[in-house]
Image (tube, rainbow, N blue to C red; front, side, top):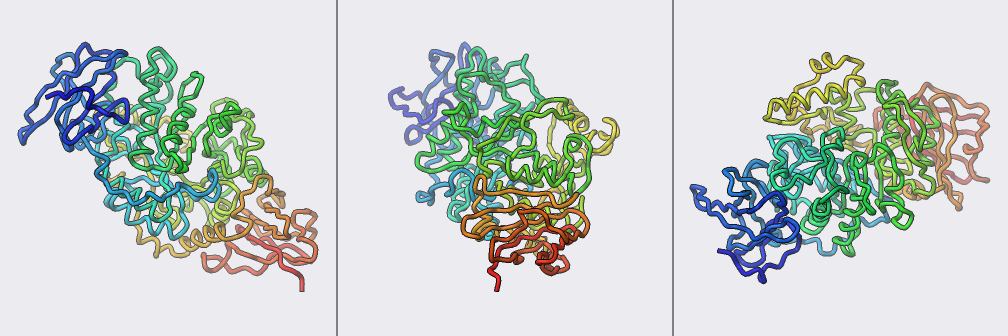
Length: 634
């Protein structure tokens, strides 16, 4: 039976919420409906009971029922024969095509009341670890992933970035085609399993941020058009289909939907922020950009707890990380693809597709250390477009740099990890640059121990037409990277719906010991970055650099206490500098340079080279990186 409206005390404007013991209030935006019913499934035979919701101004329907936790329900529009899940469902136990389920987030007993959020201002001092729950462990669940958190914390990971978890159809997928944006994927466990993962992370002083997709909905299992035609703008397409209506007619409830989603993940799951996927594909000319609005609401929801907000933006629009008072969106960080592309060119020599706009030259890495993005408004040949805006005044930690992530590994076609595309020496050197540079480093799962498992594109899509369209789109995208035609690429790529493709991507944690030299490399570098007085600073304007040769350069981390550091990187052959006419190589007066760390150590599979700096010459070992510190002369 329906309860009096006065008893309904809601936290959010949409969805099914418990408002009392065994009492739930429903509210949904459905301007296409003349009437709307809640269809409640009862008993072992799924007997269905129908309850009509009351219309409200603006196209909403609402009502309260005497049903509680675990109740499964649908919505019925205009007395039709078909039933549909709640657009703001909190859990889909049978996936996006099944009924919604009422949950009570208050049942979980949190232990993180003293957790302040990521401790450092903005991203300073953070090490981000991108994780796909379905392949991170053999089991592919939050419970199994929780067991690995202590080891990640031990080696120095401070932020876990969880790839999208909004529920999607099929048995496996990357998660970027989510359709139930409020429902944690049933494939990975229950909402309380996710609660427990985050609670455990916080007990280890590890933050957890969520990759959210606000630029499109997946093509299968999205029933929003049943309720309203105004969620999407069909004449404004992005590369995944119709754009979301953030600034057109009737966009107010659409914006409410996404802003509420941001609040929800922060409040009910204690996430520590977001990584916003492909913001360049979001069309919004509102007075406040939707991503800025979501971020502002998320910070308000977090209260005194700090959170991290990071954007992926192919256009490299620096305004996203500038303060709101300067016309920005007040985010904390942006992914820096420029660094990745230069790194790959430098250590592999690749020059196809977008790699053709990079030389992998020493100056590119110096510029990345000083200015973040390399493209700040210049033209590039890939896609024949200008890219980027000026970044002057933006701190170095704002730029999230990586040599692997889910996209870039998969863009090789076979999903090959970077270490298999280059020599051991160059791989150790680029790893040192990544982890000792002034930016914020991001690692992709398994990178830290040299995982041999690939990361391929996988998606279990039942609809043959959708499956073929996605596969052909993938082949068209990857053809330039593989230097093949579209049809040849189609034949070459593994079928994304093959369960074995998914299974091949699951990590093997025994490689932590099998690949001990590589694991030690990452562990030692993370410790050096965390403990060293200079490498941990990431101070704006505190880094300069100079080119030493065709494949070598130096970064100097300055201080006022004769406590400078040098990072000398050489991706090429052995080099001797008998006349070191570069002032950045000069030690402070009364000091000499001493080797602090070298990638050429036998501990990592190198030759354990001797010191590189003397008063007579500099010896740059081939394919190596060396960190130096000043020591007083005797």
